[in-house]
Image (cartoon, rainbow, N blue to C red; front, side, top):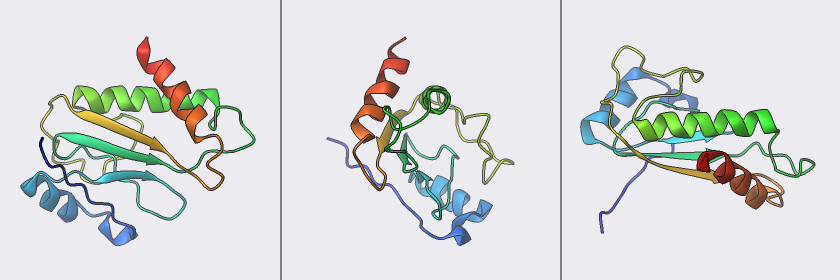
Length: 129
C-alpha cells in the first residue's frame, strides 16, 4: 500500500505561488478547504486531490443546493482528469500542474454534520452518470 501525505494549511499566508512550488517539488498534495477561514487552494499537486467541503446546510435535505452539488461534481471530474476546475482561481496560475489522472477524495463535514451523508450520496449520484 502506498503511503499518502497531504498538507492542510489553515492560514491565508499559504496562498502564495512559492508554497505551491514547494509542494510540487515534493509532490505533496494540499487540501482544498471550502471553509469560512481556511485557505482554499484548488491547484492540483501530487497524484491525488483531497477536498473538505465544510459549508453544508442542515436545513437542505442534501446538505448543499442542487446547483452547488452539480458544481462540485464537475470540479471532482476535472481534478480526476488531472486538470484544475475552471471556476476556481488557482494560487499559482503561471505554472500548470502536470496533467495526469488523479484520485479525488471529497469529504463533506460541517457544523451540524446531519446532512453530510446525504450530500455525499447526492454527489455520488451525479458522478455515476
